[in-house]
Length: 129
Image (tube, rainbow, N blue to C red):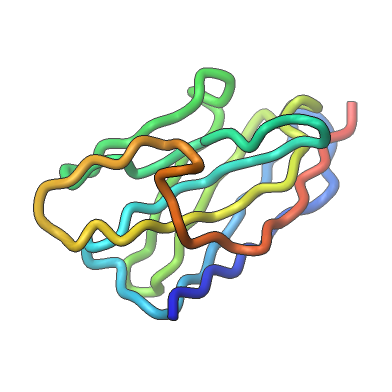
């Protein structure tokens, strides 16, 4: 059974940094799963923030976080990270980790909610102005 557990959310001032972690169990980071970070603010739809979208290590970042956020993985620890720098109040949201089985080989998964079937419970990030 795939299980994803996020951590690292906090209240931070604008301009600050946070690193979110997503500990995964039930599968290995061996190229058989696409992984990504999503966020949902109150009254808004869930949006893809940063994802590993392809078997060649391609990444996707939504425009509003480019240059500030970095997605990374520690395959030995089966953990996905999201380093968030220069945080802005508009980054305030519940952040979710997601995974989708791509069964290895050559693959592409868009960074969209319907593309991922396994989700964590979320971690809250609040950025004060």
